[in-house]
Image (tube, rainbow, N blue to C red; front, top):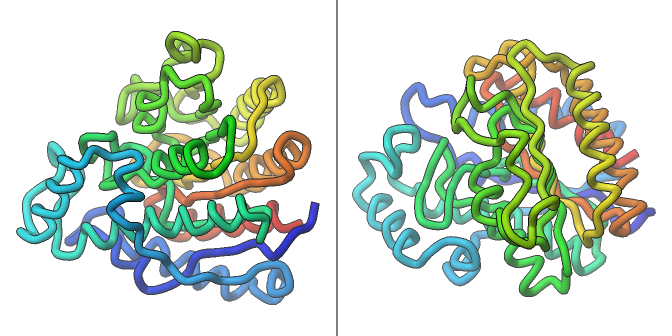
Length: 317
């Protein structure tokens, strides 16, 4: 299905989501991604267009997050020091606005997809899947994926949303906040939580209440490479094809690639191409080709760049 060019959010506002000092979540990841993208732009130029980052409103952030928590982030942003959680996610001057740009940019892509202006798009700073409704966690201040799910269900005329996450870390902020919601189809392939933060995402976690059977967690042992990932992803696709949904949100974290400094998976960027290509086929069959991709983690900048470039190539061809 062809409908509009693939959109990519690009602008200096995205670079402001960058924790100070030697923190691994910093702007160098996005700088390297856009450098590599620019080197490959000739083959993509007719298929993609760039859009400016958008600042989310407080009302939009509050679709997912509690007002008290939003107030807390604003206060810590004004102070400009300390932590928003137990020690992974520092406060810094401007962090509230930086996180709001992440949310707003994911929503901007989502709105374009829902309106039919395009079939798919990518917010490279998106996919901050650890933040909960009431707290930060794992480098994530606001959960743009959670906000996007709430928006799609409440304002986007979507009866059901599929959330697919291939980041090495389990998307706990999405899973647990929608664990009992049957409208959220959840597929997450990640490094076994017994060996990596946040320690969740076990195979037996399949949802609660009316949502049992609407969630699938596939943990992989440390050292797993492309073949293990493809096997897991194919299993996940069988699950997705058995469900009904109106749009796919795709968190394509690159910290699962070999030599990431934080994780112990050993994929190559080929896994990201494989996942995005197969997911595009599923989207065309199930939901009119509608995919919103979000960057997620990844702490080796070149790995990030190559993985996300592969996602873009797969989704535009």
